Length: 146
Image 1 (cartoon, one colour):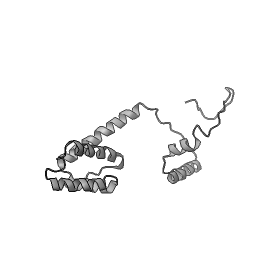
Image 2 (tube, helix red, strand yellow):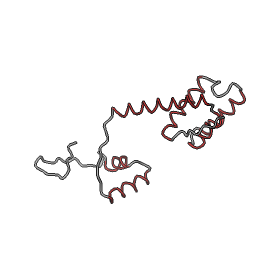
Image 3 (cartoon, one colour):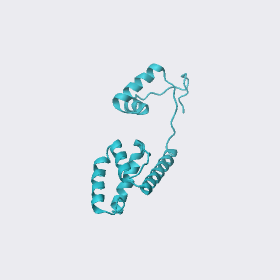
Image 4 (cartoon, helix red, strand yellow):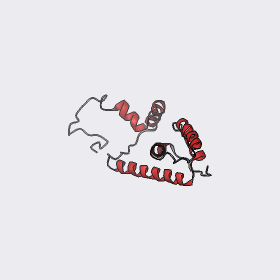
């Protein structure tokens, strides 16, 4: 319906789908005032909503300028909520690893479809670490207190 070149990114798709679902539930005429056209758009939407490429194609086919503006606003609001939520959780730590360690982590991450942090937590998390206490006189080349 429109010549928009905006692409809804994977990380924004849930916000866009939630917004469209809400619009379709609360405003039946949101897609179109013509019943047959609305039914066709809804049917195609149900098939397209789970695949990123199909979803973007559906949006470009069925949404008008105003609807694109609404979706962009919904995405912006969702991003803002996400950023605000992330501010209140523990901050990330930066570590240095050898090239060999990085290769191993990367290989495991690709195999398990996880981030590097998730690989470390899943494979070396609390369940697999034996609890040992380091005496105060023991020296480490790393400051692990923080």
